[in-house]
Length: 228
Image (tube, rainbow, N blue to C red; front, side, top):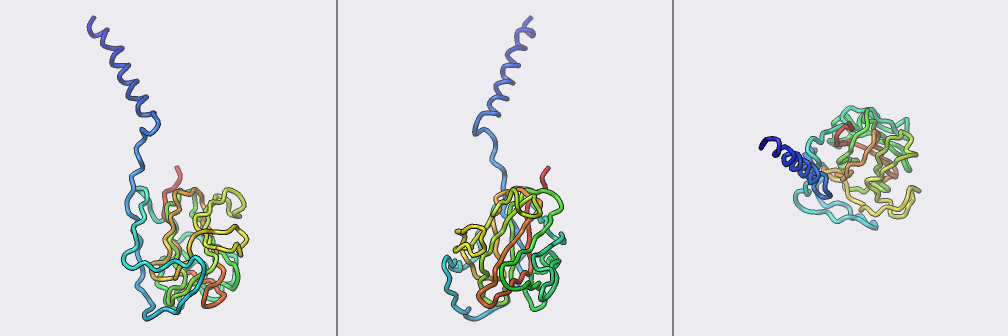
């Protein structure tokens, strides 16, 4: 008889544990680790030419702060197909955007025509994008205009578009005014926190730079986890 009486108590205890697990705030925070990004050697030395722009970020000495990403985050973009608004680059090929070579030496970047241009990476499947690193031409201290980075499941970027970076301070690209800072290109590139934006495609815009009207890309790396 004693065993029969104890059964409801055990059941109630298990039910209480289950309800506690479902209570608001009971879920465990997602475990995160520092993202490891391999940097190319610095290419320019000496005193950079002064650049005067609104929202220009002041260079920060020392090591860049770590970007924390979910455990299991991996590089998704290596060797993935790349398309571009300029189908006939002035120099190089669009595939160089994901070929793994981010050195920035002459001939190692793809150069697109003047004005607003974009490159687009097909990750092959929907993903949760944790971070995006982009290296434009970094052999000299220059600033690229209207850097806008978006994630979407729509290859035409007309629906479900998540903008994860936008430093177009005057809306000259006509995609909305952005509040992110302009920045000087270095071997560190630009590391963008995509905050888990979901999508299969990543598109990056630029609109010339402070040295000329052209748009160069040495490498883009997209980090995340495939959607299940």
